[in-house]
Structure formats: structure tokens, C-alpha cells
Length: 371
View 1 (spheres, helix red, strand yellow):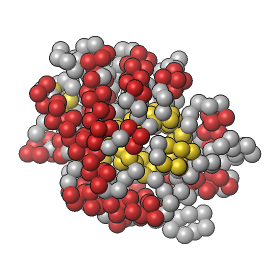
View 2 (view 1 turned 120 degrees about the vertical axis):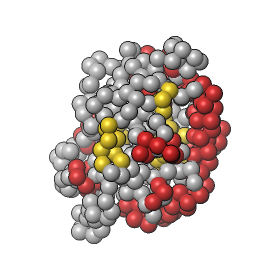
View 3 (view 1 turned 180 degrees about the horizontal axis):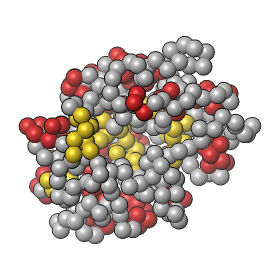
């Protein structure tokens, strides 16, 4: 992260309208899996403190949050499908709102990126097709485990899956969130249906581009029906190979997908530009501006942003919202540091990212030394 800033900051720190909300600035805190939920995937007061510390972001997108027991693929991650989870998330949303922030819940089903140890009754993870992810392990409560070959979802199971997204949306609304984000990136379930490398189905959810996008469209329709389109965003990673995924024609696939989300009126599209946690040009020549042009809502850019790049992107109108992830871990006051040109704390050590409790989570100080 650079610490020498241009004097001109475009409109990065000005308010922006997002659906019914007025965000205090254009900086978004990215979803960051931290694996610190309490038993049963229930957020607690420590999680509320963590998010409230970072509420100066114009918008917070929560860590990926399981929509159902089947959707779980990492130990100690939160859910948004049970009454206890709703009550736990209410602690978080109340704390963020008290601090003047806005927060969206990211709805997550991992699909094949799981392990029987994380599933009810030791069931196999599910996916679009029975294709094992290579070189990927699952984080379980007993350590890292090799992911098995998943079970392909039956066609008659898909309506129930779609309904679980709608149920999670209603739970998020009850928990006091400002909206929800559909996670359709990083090689998780919806991405597994979208991409040609993981979808070899021959039913209505496989084959043609329209069929591969059918689950995404049905989920988005169900989620907007459960709330409203101006409270719903979607996340894509068109050129990311995260979790052993690829597509024969990502420009066509994601051009179609984002057009369908625009047709449904979603309030923003959150796009990982490049390889997740890697280079921004992972597929040279991919045209992200074409995605922006195809979408009528706000365009949120993510991945490896520096302050200078964020300013440049706003100055050139390449994005409406600019998403920062890992810098928010060790800099709870990241927005103020960027605004004033103050130096940033070093990125948090990777061994502090996942699991544990307060250390490496809520004990990073602001620049004035307070926590």
C-alpha cells in the first residue's frame, strides 16, 4: 500500500448515493473471512467491536456468511439462517449504525469448497458437477483437509437451494443489515455453475451460457423478491482462478451475467479485477470497462488497490466505489489515514488472519494509539 498520496483526491471522500442510502465516502471495506464466529456460527460482541471500529468506511461488506448448514466450507465462519445468528448479527449492525456506518451481509454458499467434517452428518459437499478442485484444501476444526469429489446437485434440489438464499436474505433484513451481497465469485457455488470448467451439466442449468447463468439469475430474483433490488449487490471475479476454477470465455460469461443483474436492477456490482490476492492483469486484455458499461447500477472495483490507483480510477470514472481489504485489518481507521496522508500500519501477519479471538482482530490501534 503506497503512503505518498497525490494532493488531488477526486471525490473519493465525498458522499455517494447507493439505493436508499447515502454513503459517507466511496471507500468500501471488502469482505474478509476471519473465522472468529462463536459456536453455531453466531457472531458475538467481539465481532460487533471489530466491525464498529471500521465503520468510517462508506460501506462495509461482511465476511462471507453461510446461507445454510450445507453452504459452510470453513471452520468458525458465521451464518445467517438461524434465530441465534440473527440475534448475533443484530449486535454487529447496531454497533456499525451507532458509529455512523452502513453494512451489507455477503450471502455465501461454498459449494464444493468444503469437506464432510463441515457438513451435516458428514455429507459430501455439493457442486454444479462432480469435479474435484485440485490443489485446494478445506479449513476444518481439526486442521486442513483434502477436499473430496463433490456430489452434483440434482435438478429437483435447486428450488430448495434458491429458497435458502431468500431465507438468508429475510434473516439479514431481520438482523438490521442495510442490504445483502450475493457472492458469485472465488470459485464458490454460483461461480461453479457459471464457469465452463466446473459445470458439465446437461439439464437446464448446464451447457449454454444462459443455462449456466440460470442459478445466478434465479437466486438474484429470489433475493430481490425477499427484499428489494436497491438493497442487493453481487460479487464477481471474472478473471480469478481462485479455488481451481476457469472459464473458456470469461468476457462473454460475465458480460452476460452482469447484464442479467442490471436487468434485475441490482444496486451494485462488486468486481474482483484480476486474480484474488494476486495480479490485476491475470487475463491480459480482459475488458473490465465493458462490464461497467453493461451495468446500470454502481460499479465497485476490488483487488490490490492503492490510494493512488483508487484516485486515478475515480478521476477516469472507471469505478463508483473502491474496495480495500487487507489494509483494513491492521488499520481500523484506514479512511482517516488515507484522507490525511498518515502512514499505514503494516499488513497484519497472515497467521493472524484466520481463527483465534481478539488478538490480531480488535487490538490493532488507530493512529492516535486508541483501540
